[in-house]
Each structure stands twice: as C-alpha cells, then as structure tokens.
Image (tube, rainbow, N blue to C red; front, side, top):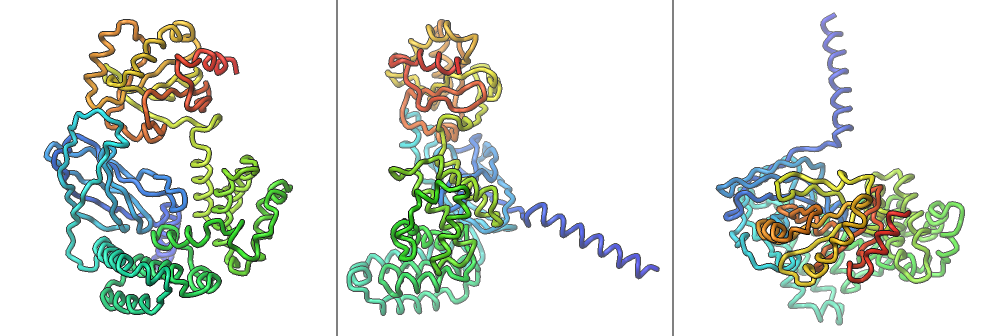
Length: 472
C-alpha cells in the first residue's frame, strides 16, 4: 500500500513539475550585482533584443541604484543572450546565462552633466568590469575571441577578400580551436563556428549552396546567438528576390494578391532545396517580407498580411514572436497603431499616465526650456487649448535634465494651464516616440492610437489637424 502511495505521489509530483516547466518556459533567475559610482538614486535597467532581426528591445528588469552606488538586479530568462544595461541613455552590453550570478562594476561617469543636448547625442557607452573566477566564462572568451578576430581581419583583409587565401582561414581556425579548447559553453561553440562561417563567406571558401548545407540545412535555428544571426542576416539578405537561383524569377506581387499568400509563398519557397527546413524557410520568408515592406510598388498592407499570418499560424514560437516584432517595427508610430504607453510625473510629483486620457484626444508635445523654437510654439498652444480643451487633452513633456527648470518656467508662465510632465528617469519614452529634435508634436486619438506622427506644429496648422482628429 505504502509503495503504491509513494508511486502515485511521484507521478503527481512529476506531472506538477512538467506543468510548471511548461508554464514557466524553463525560466531561471539570473542576478547582476554591481556598483555604479555616481549613479545613486538613478534607475538601472536590463533589456535584450527580442530577436536579432528587428533588434526590438524588450525589458527584462530594472531597479533603483542605492545612494552608495550599489544595486542588485534579478531577472528571469530562459536562454543565454546578449543583454543591455542602461542608466538613462548610457548603455553597455554583456552576455547573461540562466541561473548565474554576476558581479560587475560600472566605471564612473558624470551623470549630473547639465549640458542640455539631445540625450540621443549626449549618451555615452558605459564601461563594465565583470568579475569572474572561471577563465572560460562566456563574456571573457567572447571578448578575447572577438579581439583576436578583429586583429586577424585587420591584418589579412585584402588576402581574404581580394585574393581568397582560404589557407589563412584554416590556420586561424586551428589556432582558435587550440586556444579555446577548454571553453565548452554551447553558446560560445556555436558563436565561434558561425564567425568562421562569415569568414568562409568572405573568402568564398565554399559556394553559397555549400555554405547553406553546412550551416543552415538540418541545423537548429539559433535565434539568440549573435554570430549565427549575423551570418543569417548576411546570407539571406535579398535572398528571395535576388540571390536565390531557384526563386529570382518568382512574381511575388502576384502571390501577395492571392487568397492565401502565406501558404502560396511557403509552397513557392519550397522550390529552393536549401530551404527544406520548414522553420528556417519561414524565417527566411519573414526576412524577405520585412525587406519588401518598403520596396517600391509593393502594397504594405499585403506584405503585413503575410507577416500577420506567420504570427497567427506558425507552429514555431520564435517565428511567431519575430513576426509580431517585425509588425511592431514596421508600423511603429504609424496612424492607427497603439501609441506607446507612459507614466510620468507632474510638477506636484503626481503620476500621470497616457491611459488616463483614454476617451479624449491627446495633443502631446516634447520640449525643453533651452529650445527657442519650443518656446515660440508653446506660446501658440494656449489659444488651441482654449478652443479644444473640452475635447482634447494637452500634454507637454519636458526633457530638461533638471526638473526644477520646468517647474520654474511653467510657474512664470501663468497662461500655461494644461498638463506639464517631466521625463525624469523615464528616458525610454523619448526612444518610444523617437524624439530626435524639439519640439515634437504627436496627435493621439480617443482610442489611444496614433492619429498623426509627427504632427504639424502650431505655427504650421496644428489647429486644423486637431479639428480633424476630434471629428473622426
């Protein structure tokens, strides 16, 4: 009886663990402990490319840095990846692996620089020191290998590219295998293999067909391996429309007009024997559609229909995600797409979110107190506010480094009675709205979707654009 009881319990426990791993996606907690001198009180954020075709960044985690500059940032990840640490617009990259703990130090920079310039220009690269005991730790071996490869290419580029001296690649390959013989990390093994694939492509070591057979056909798709995807993006650039011998005569415009263009395109791509791997073939299709989206004479809505079909019908989760990311990148800030969400603070340190204004149109502007053009345009907002404030919300986001400058300026301008917010540490909002210069105006409709981006400025006819938005 007891034997049967324990056997049944083991079955239940096994079933529970299986369900747990399915639901959690085998995530493990990775922890980054570190110091960032001079950054006390600021937020440090960890992001990663959602994929290595669009490079759309996805958040992994963030934490406030202590007054002493110390922080501990835990994140849950499934696979080894190249991640991005950022403090405001200052960034650094490092590899992280599931379940590992890292100790790092970020070199000191002047985070309190009051020089008022666009943060896209002002940003600096953060310099990291990663402390580890294992001489074959991934960050170390990749850095060492990359430095050696850069030196090799610098010294031998003409011999490789112009003279196709493949023997140099063979010699270098032997040297690297010897040097990194003890590095057993699977990510690094593949990283090194596909770096050599790129060198073989450069020297024409193999034909394009042979390269595909060696590195793609019947090989796993390594979505998050930087060198695999670097080689993939290079090899399959303009592939379906130009470089594939089997596909270069295909009339894609006609296929896109069909009843089921996704199925028709997948069937057409099957004519290329190098794409017999269904997962790879679908990924190549996505890359091809991304390239066709802004190609003259192609209808963007037809291309998007194929990308959407991959997202909805693919049996490969990574391809589904990449399709969604491609759609996001291609349609970002286009009319009818969801406006990027944000929560910022007003002069009273009250949080204000974009969603708070749903049901009304929003006239959003980004400005600074040191931008003369901004101040001229801001003076023209008050008449528009008086005319439309019952039907549209006016929100001005100040990007000054010091929030007190905004508070003082607005307090002096008694007729500035609409909503003023400060960017604070939420510099990602400037990236979300691709704010490259000031002022920038954006119109958001009552459903929270982009109506006009960039919107015309008040001096150039914003009045008519607002009226059109509220009448839709």
